[in-house]
Image 1 (cartoon, rainbow, N blue to C red):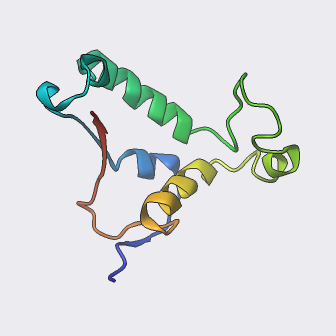
Image 2: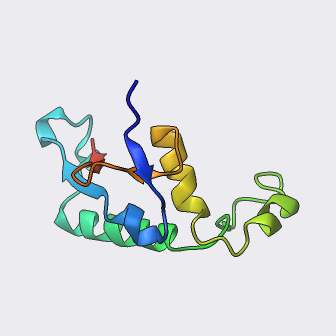
Image 3: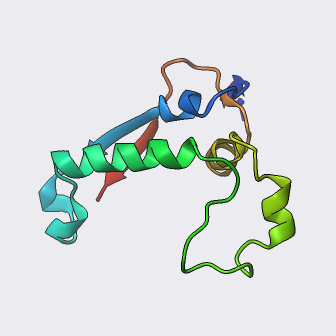
Length: 110
C-alpha cells in the first residue's frame, strides 16, 4: 500500500485547511435534521477550527477524569498539535499530513 502521508504538521491550521465541507442530497438523508444548511456549515467550520486550535485534551462538563485521567491530561496540556495529530493518525494511520497537496478530508452531513 502506498503511503499518502509525508508532510510534518507544524500548525493546526495545516489540518483545518484540508477540510472540505459538503452536504449530501436531502433525499438521501434519513431525516431532514441530519442535513446541514449554509448556516450550519458555517457554525461547524468555526467549531472544528476552534477545536483543532485548542491545546491538550478538551474539557467537558459531562466528562470526569475517568474519561482521560489527570496524568494523561498533564502530559499534553500545552500541546497545540495533539488534537490534529490524533485525527490524522485515526484517519490515515500516520501523524503526517498528506504529501499530495490536492488531498482533502471530506466532512459531510448525512
